[in-house]
Amino acid sequence: ASAVGLTANVHKDPITREWTLEGGALVLADRGVCLIDEFDKMNEQDRTSIHEAMEQQSISISKAGIVTSLQARCSVIAAANPIGGRYDSSCTLAENVELTDPILQRFDCLCVLQDTVDPVADERLASFVTESHMLSIPTSDVARGAALAPQRSRFESSDGIDSGDLIPQALLRKYIQYARANCRPAL
Image 1 (cartoon, rainbow, N blue to C red):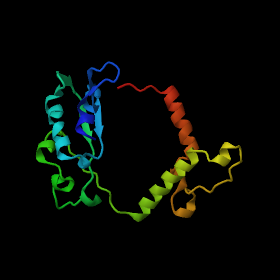
Image 2: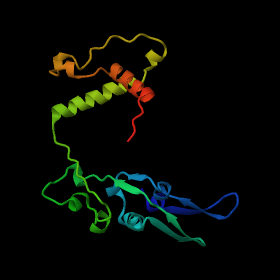
Image 3: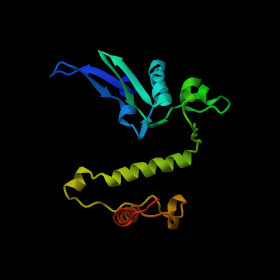
């Protein structure tokens, strides 16, 4: 994400030849939520450009004869990865993600999510994701009408998981379809 993409941009309209103002993600998210991924990859100048938006809830523009203030009343959720890909618990959050105190202080809540190394759980998660993807997207053989060979579910008892606790994907799909059609929860 760049400062222009998050705040606002002034550019010349090719048809009218006039300068026009185009709001960035923070302006477009007014009265909503703006999600910023890879916050640690932004350069420091781009990060400091959103200070005003996060503190004053507005963005001031003074470019190409356009002087205005745009509303940016939104919540900002930003995700940053630790240096080297691993979080060091002996260091502070600011040291782990190399963010300055002024930008960190503009967030109301800081949350650290740590991935514990567990090869068995990681392999099981990777298998689930790839199997779900393969089952949800038809291959060219299936698209042409070929029958699928019966596949052994990885949830059978051979991998040590009690299959009685797991919901088959087809049943889960039906449940979600039913819930979307018939359930209307109210807060």
